[in-house]
Length: 363
Image (cartoon, rainbow, N blue to C red; front, side, top):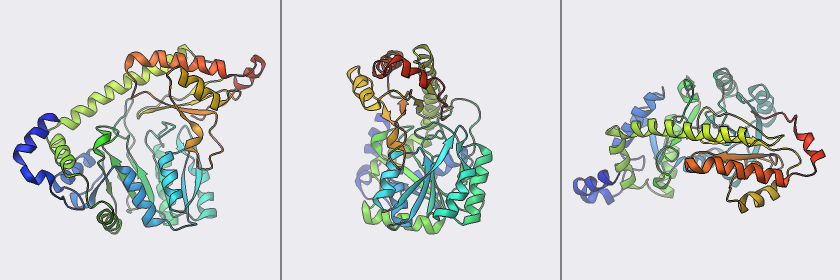
């Protein structure tokens, strides 16, 4: 990136600091179009709008589709940032349960009939926070329900390229044959958080509204960031970087899973994600989560409490989200050991611990 930046200062000159088009730097849109083809998604450059991260895409979707009192359906649990954005727009946010195969589409239809939502929000691949992936069968079921009820699907896909086991499942956008899926993605989770560059591909009428909001809010995405990313992708650095991340993050995931097994406390259960960032852990029922946060913090261990990911805020108090991508390799084993020790210390009497032994994990 330093080499690319130095080169751009020399070759792009003052253009590096001028406005770029509202829809985004066209060569970057061309490069993203190429990346999308690798994800089995057909999207011409004109069908892509560059955003300041996919978080801006969630905000724009809320502004476009939601009026106070409207309902939005989300997975339960789901990304807490989306819950906050939809609520700030005045929406009622209703959760659809998730199991090991993703959103429960058998429950979804009754919720569609009852609530008549404006759209369905989903992270179908390596979901945040649960790490689960919506099965291919359920992806088709979700799309068919969207067609039947003429309901948009907002697909958030920040982790789709970070797969470590098996063959990735096609995105909803790749399977969509009638233009019901609004697809958001970002470079934040696979490249650089600080650049704040994401994108949307959607039907033309939706893209036009996104571009209008982009012009009203911040005019365009950071010009130097767009030019640097375009060169980074065009020269093949992006694909090499993704391959490196898959190897590195798979290694970290496996170390954390091994440590969880090594230091396991009775009543603790977890999933094995096939990609993404997160391991979703269920704690024994007798662990007071607020005390656990404090005890773990004293030991230098940080996690995200589960209730943040539930729309009603009253569930998830027995879950925690662990991130294996941030810590150094040598810190993971020690961190899990300290976390499990904090769990032991936070548990109530030994007789109560037995109640957690047969807890059924979410995933």
